[in-house]
Length: 300
Image 1 (cartoon, helix red, strand yellow):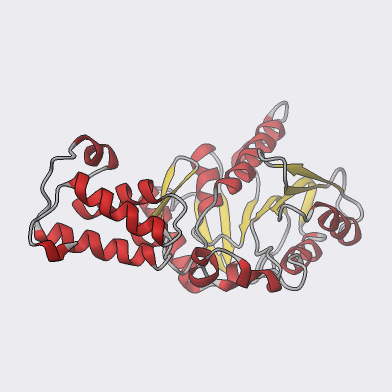
Image 2 (cartoon, rainbow, N blue to C red):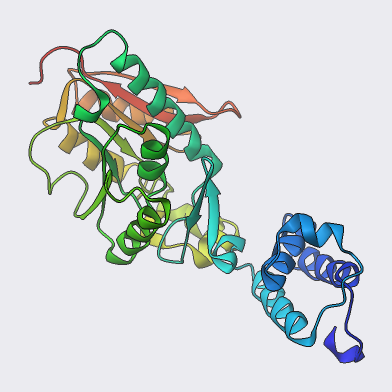
């Protein structure tokens, strides 16, 4: 586009960018073009749409075209912009972490419901509960939960040092570093004692399916955050085995699973934590999404 010699208006540039992104197979070329231009202009999307006559400077045009080039190569929009909305929060994301998905917000919603039910009619405070987000990545689940429940303290654990750096940065940006603490380790192994609520969005994609995913996922997101082993449930089984002795009486474990994994996930829970009750809840699209394991009474 820059070869014409004339600086384009935002409307002209958006038309050009939409065509390039659509040709590259991007799912939402119009929206992505608008967000990329807003990022290049350091404006918000509403300003871009309200000023179609704005003439871009050469530096603005050069930066915007660089961003489009990256998106044409199917680099995820969140990595290009450096942020991703999640449960009302604006989270920093880098290629070191999985990009938070809308489906995971449903896990946070169910955790909030569980906490509210737990607090109703009991003398204990939510601040006294031990809550952990296993495989925290960007810290999305832990931070969203702490933001929504102001008295709650949450631990986030991950075995990736770069991911923990992103999570800690998000906690500082959101002012939640005093109530959300991050630790390095393999699932629950670093911790003594039991937890009242264990949350997890572990890798659950079967290894053989990874190459078939859209390029944004298969080529850019960290494989360690995606690969769930031969059937996609290997990390979950490891967590369930550890949770058998770390899930407190009257506690719950909630884990996100794949859309077709409900039956094998229930079987794994029944085999590995036989004294608990397990169920699978569906997401808004009607797919298996959240395994919930609850322990009633005394721990083994």
